[in-house]
Length: 111
Image (cartoon, rainbow, N blue to C red):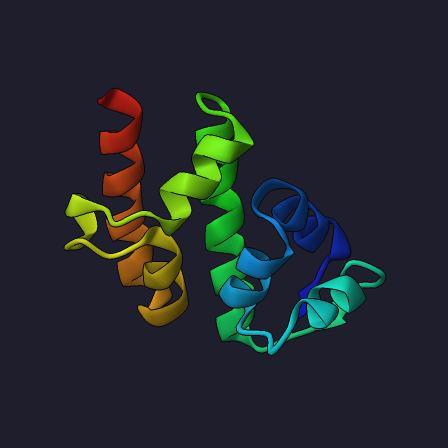
């Protein structure tokens, strides 16, 4: 699937290169830099993870700063069984992760 560079740029600018690399499953931030320069063919799994991360960040940006969103993505979350949202995005099947993260984001916004 074709991952548009604008999505990767958005995540890099919002979350930083290191977290974006982690979410993508890249070996280094150099991969993120390369993906920011042109659209990239990726597996459907990577595409789904990046899309989920993009949607989570977009939803949170309506309420929080990028610094707070970064903390949310890295921090242990009780709604997620004390796992970090970034870890759930990277390690869980996307449909299941989407359900979990919808609940976690809703709880975060309303608390």
